[in-house]
Image: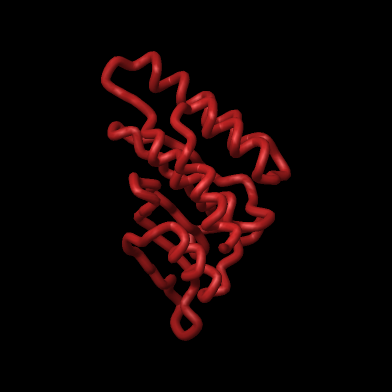
Length: 149
């Protein structure tokens, strides 16, 4: 069984925000605690609004993604939309960025901006994919989500 599959099996069993967050803190090595602190802040903001809830399934998808990328860096932005889905962005500059909308059932929507090898414009890749397939996809594109995309 792959490490990612094992992580998914563990994440599947979690049912509350605190369980999911604690599991992330205890199993994913991050250089900074920004991600966990920001998630708590977003959860508190959603709790104060009557019409907003942070999607636990979206959180699980994000956790599986982050846990599958060794030495992942702090995202440039982490927000939640009106449907409770998490949006995460890593951006080096206008030519180099990755934006994810984490959805239910371990799927995500993505937009990747990367420089073209042939013209003076950026290449835009976008779509929807199962999170572990997406991890393989960005590896095949040699995109590293470290301090330099």
